[in-house]
Length: 247
Image (cartoon, rainbow, N blue to C red; front, side, top):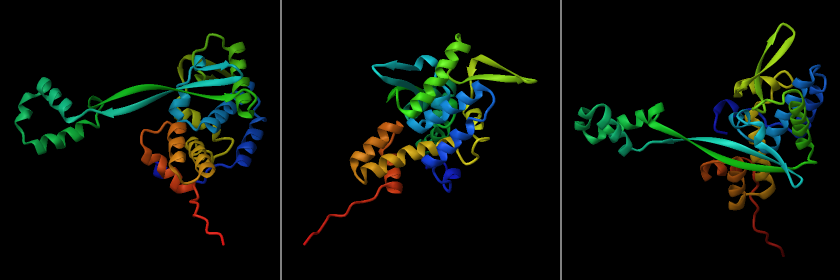
């Protein structure tokens, strides 16, 4: 895993996820019940980052030819290079250019961590699942509810606030990743959203084994930037098959 705080947490099992969904049936509010079930279904089926799930808009989900298509928006940071840092200094403080190259390189590394030192590139990735999949059904139930009760909504998971015993949807913004996590915690405190991503990677590794095909599949499914990250999933979960020697 990329974050150390998840290192010792076990990935959820199918049984645990089902028990969590069963528990959600007791949520009195139909909206809250359908919403958390949709969230669980999305992260279970697609293994996406919570920010990518939280930014989904209703028009990112579409039914075509018997499939539910979900288009996720990936926001990837790309650090600007040393040459771009030098151009930045020419505009802001040309006197800095008189420093030795080693100092400029050190300054550039620090600058590349600031908001000026990187650019965010958005990419779209579309995944699909057959509509009669049990998790797709949970997603579609929630969408149907939104179309009926919040027809002017933009986001799949709009923000909102409670006033006394009433809850009001705020269509101007989506729930944050931290707020999405809080939807699941009352049902199962062990279910961190990132663990569903780990679960998806482990499923592929166990199914395909220790080989380059599995690496490519993990990278494609989880939309990873580097093969090395995909290899980490393979090393954690795949079994290496030994060459058979039969008499």
